[in-house]
Image (cartoon, rainbow, N blue to C red; front, side, top):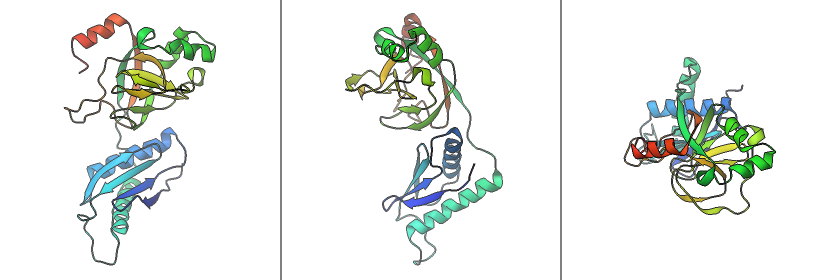
Length: 242
C-alpha cells in the first residue's frame, strides 16, 4: 500500500490530511496511527484531531502556533510540523493503535428491532439468520460522528445489507442498532434517523460526565452479542451501562 499523503488548508485554523482515496481497513489503520501520533506529541497551538474514513482534520490556534519568522504562513508551519510526525512514523514503523474488541450486547427484534423482519425479507433470509450474521464477526469503528458517540461501523456482510428507509423516523431511541447499506451503527441519543433498526443495546454510548465522553473510539473493534429481553433489563437495572 502507498504511504503517500497530502495536506490541504481547511479554513484558517485547520489542515485536512488525506491518507487514502478509498475506505479500507489499511487506510483506516493509517488514519488511527497518525491521529494517535499527533495527539501523543502535539505541537504548540494544537487543539484536536478529528479522524474520518480516509482523512484527519488537524485543528489549531493560529495565534499560538510558533512561527520561526514571518516568511512562512501558519499553514506552512503546521504542515512542516505534521511532516515531522510522518517522518517519525516511517522511521518507527510500528502501529500505535490498540486493537480493542468491545463487547456490545444487543436485544434483537421485537420492540427494540422493528426493522429486523424487513432486513430479513429484503435479503430473502430469516430473522435468526440476520442476527447470526450480524453478530458473527468483529467490526471496525471507522469514525465517530452524526451525533455524539455515533459509530460508523463498516464491513456488514452483503447478505444482510439493506437500504436506508425512504422516510426517516422522527425519533430513534438511544441504543438502537441499525443497518444502512453495508454499514451498521448505534444511536447514542434519541434522534431522527433512517437506518433499519434491528435491535437495541443497553450500553450508554454517550457519557458526557466521563472522559472520554464516548464509549467507542475510531480504530476500535466491536462485536455484537445477542441477549434476550431479561438480560437487557438486568443490565439496565444494575446500571452497568450508565
